[in-house]
Length: 108
Length: 116
Image (cartoon, rainbow over all chains, first blue to last red; front, side, top):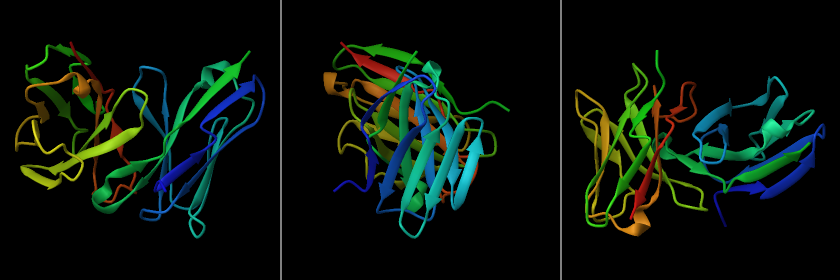
């Protein structure tokens, strides 16, 4: 069993749809990262969460530390949101353990 | 204040050559992490360094790979006698703390190594 698991692995949505990506983890200190990566691109940090909920524009991230579960939501999705979304939990020494990523395609 | 700077962005090496990947952390960050992303695979931890010290190298292949973070200058990931299987994107991240849960954990744009 992977220490950080995401679902779904692939997601196709129509523009405007509400999107949810889930992440469960069995390792880590009490925090989680959400990252975004475009094909061939670098890694952008979207959120670092240690409790509750954070919002940035159309992106919302929530975390339940007791259940070791986090969700990333995208409201009013747009084709430019198409990317790979990765959750990552910090383990000992601060190194990150990554989920396998969710490939999102938003169609116009 | 620039973010994490990695160079080169793209590196092509022939089998058997050496590859040197450089990472300059965010100013004031003393913790550097290297990660590798093989084609069609997820990101995997390689090594964690502080200035002049390797703290955790549990993800480094046992042979041909080494890393350093000298007192002055960037962190270097060195791959000797490269093979085709080393072709991957190598990302560096820096942090002001060793917790990984603090603010400021920042990734570089990566170096894409192609071995021909």
